[in-house]
Length: 209
Image (cartoon, rainbow, N blue to C red; front, side, top):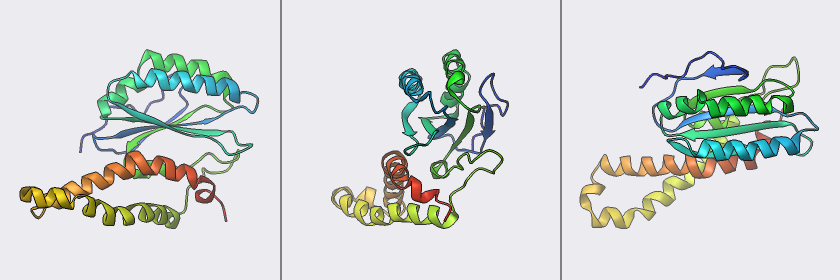
């Protein structure tokens, strides 16, 4: 496992920064903002500019934005990069420093940043009311959501790849076949389904009861 080159020290104006262990592939840069109630329009404009700038950086693999429900103020921005080096370049860049300075007047509290990899980053704790600990989805809900995504894929993906394995016996060899299927399933889960699925079930996921 490659050790991160991202420092655990907050950059100027960057707020709370937390580093988690991560592999070298598909590094997620998760930013949480609590936006002032009267600043949503300005913040959305800032968000468009931020996504445009981030997209120009090496290794950029897309951005997902979890917007607040009606009346809410908490945004979660997930910027995906190919490697730790790519994430480090974005985190330490002058462009990001400029953007963070520009957004400060629109925030109620300083931003929270978490960097890492893996599916756990779709279930990060959310900021709670002042004085309360962050809200974390119950483990059983995380298990249920993840299982409901992977279960049908374990039936559909092997069936879809059947012709490939039949036509190329070497790819269907024991171990090789399972590796291909696992890679495809994980890619579909991480990049296609989970960003949309967790947004869809967000209210249920973080419901207290």
